[in-house]
Image (cartoon, rainbow, N blue to C red; front, side, top):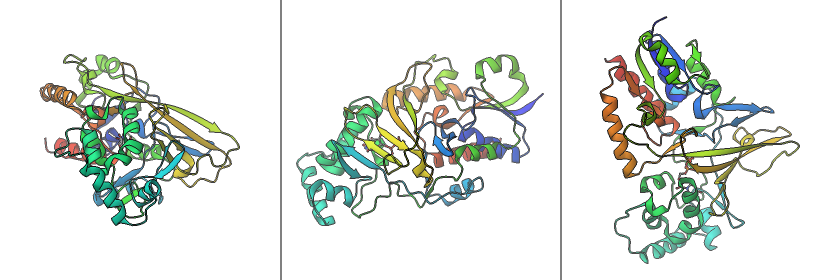
Length: 368
Ligand code: UDP
């Protein structure tokens, strides 16, 4: 059997690509090494609760076209992400906003908060932030940095904030209103019924072979495909011949708590102290306003990645970005393989950006 495309990876990128290329009249086959589709957006029902198996995924975007796109495949609820941070038994609202500042300093007005932050920043004398620590300090001052950023970030990335790129922290908004909505985006929600169903719908009738690694598969089937979209790790594809890119991995401890109706009162609770080994606890039912008699919680333990682990986050520091560029040059010399997604493009993508990148790739492919 011949196909126009082999798609390696049944995650969001691969699913959008398969969907669009099928609509354009191309034949596709998808393979995935896991035993399920949907990559890291996979949700699995446990006692009727959609559990975000590889970490919390909250869809948000400001791009209307992207929102309209995803809404073809699911109805979204009106969940708004409002995480709570725990530091030494005190609770603080996220993102950093007037609720946070009021709790930290016992103040009421934006002017008071701005004055405290400005005086903390002035004492630091940072003119051009060179790393995440300096970027964070020059945005929020010392108190917020020490209590809510430093420990969490160093746990998540496994290195000192001085050795991290500042763009990571730009994800975190800072505002002077009493507004706990984590994202600034116009559209936000959780797909009713879970993410797996979205990917299922996108994939439609495209055949999928699960539990199959690319290497094993392609050694016997290379000439069956005109083109190959590879959404796995780009360095692994090239057998690490230029060196290993770094990733962070996360170990999840999922726990079904029978008879516990409500464990923590919020979907996401971050633990910002360095000494607590996990970064957050997710209580999945709250993503869907669930009223089930039981609950499922997941603790998230970040860890350094080594071969064989699941890669989650690319570590986009200078060393890795340089190395990635070299892999990209190699990738450009491949005549039939293209690379996409968080791992293929080595980018810290949100879901909306994954969809947009996949649609861009579709446009390029159609124009070939
Ligand atoms: N962050 C932080 N404290 C928090 C939550 C986030 O300092 O309580 C910082 C941290 O540097 C982290 C970044 O914000 O790496 C992005 O966090 P987010 O939870 O948005 O990322 P996700 O893991 O969900 O992609």
